[in-house]
Length: 339
Image 1 (cartoon, rainbow, N blue to C red):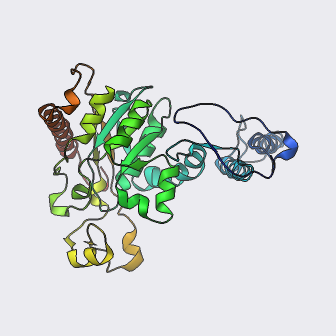
Image 2: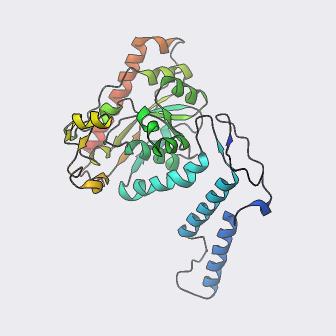
Image 3: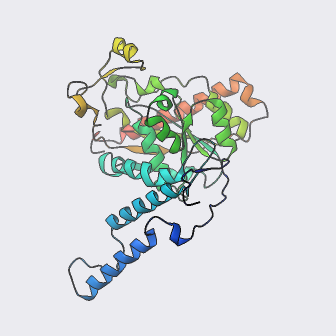
């Protein structure tokens, strides 16, 4: 219906397509129409011998972005998009979240990615990564790394702290980007549905540690993530992130202010709060995200997920793998800002 702007809610991992609408009901030109106009302009410039015309005309990056914005607005107005039971909106993620994050990923942090072949082409896997940097920029950059570097451009569904989803604007945006709260139930549901899922077992202990303790992994919780992987027989992929520790070098934590504002920590960095809002701009450290070889869980016996000794040993194995990879990456780094 032309006046219906409500998104369709679909069960997780169901790929039923929306019915096509007649062109007369669309709010504006399609992406293909805009691209065609740009292509025709480039062709005429090339025929006239004007400078800047390509030998094989292709739409400019600016034209592609304009087309993407037009397509996004049209689909939001018409309600021609879908969300799953967690609130994941692939259309929002592709058109809004990822383009914004790519500015940091490509231009600011200049992220290098290795070991992407260790992620499965399809089916579930649990990515377990170190966590640092005061603000969870590492989680956001990890989502871009997986989507843009994986051969099938898979979406990474992250398990985040409750506080994130309680924040106005940020909480709903996180839901739309495909993320949910870090609990064993949601982890199991995502993995059982074949989703690529990520968890940061250090939690606030890693995110809020001081700069002097950088790249020293904190305790990995109770191993709930391991239990979820064992229950669903999903491989565990250790992930080591270098660069996130330097974006907000935390030299002190004012616990009194943290309690006052109801947050886990109140960081003091060289620029915050001294520089005011400018102190919220992350330092442009050079990043490297490395995916390790997957740890298979199919060989474990049924009921292993409920065995504390098994979950403890597997948790310790994952933690040690990440820690040793961090040491190796740091040994090969000459400078925190230039790599």
